[in-house]
Length: 261
Image (cartoon, rainbow, N blue to C red; front, top):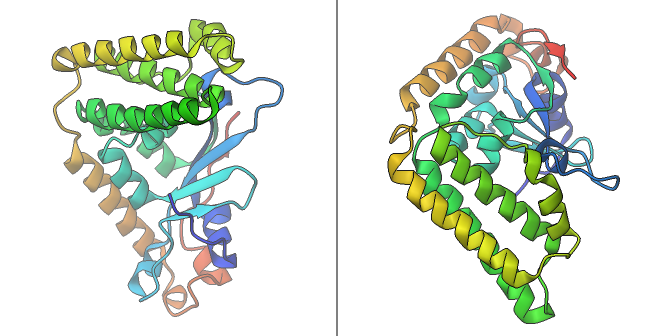
């Protein structure tokens, strides 16, 4: 994914217009160790008047903090409707750092994004990652064990989602076996066998999955349109004539929410 360069105006969007932010990566998955980074992901709502100009607001912004990445709401919803694994998992993080009223509406839509399409997208993503690991084995004699661990975790999550209709990203009781993979204590042959078994179990679960065939696109679109309209109505007349990133436009959207730990 190509990131937008972090310009001053873009930083304003993340700083002042974030509606939801969470911790992802190993800390959200229950796989953190002493040396683990803190990966932060978020969603910001660009004020509607910014879309009335030739230069549109960015679809995503990297930073301003280390290991921080944020999506504009429409881009985030679009990717979630396509069952992007990273986006869907972001919506189900157990470590929410910030959420406002609009963010809570987004979280309430989590089930609307889920469908049996996850079988195809998760499997396709997993296959691409597995090919990279196999290439590492051919070139270096061993895979990147951390990546192997995270692929196993993703395959477990995909299988269980198809079986239950619920996306759970914390690995729970699988923590120690997965960390053993990360430490290189499990042979690549055993890891391959484990991956193949999980993929087969997901294939078997897909036809009987309680998930709907398609995501609820209409429900998500209604939320997005209402949110854009509300943002436009909050815009003061003088803000509509202002530079898109000056102090007047920064105050277009509603107040910040409550931080949660």
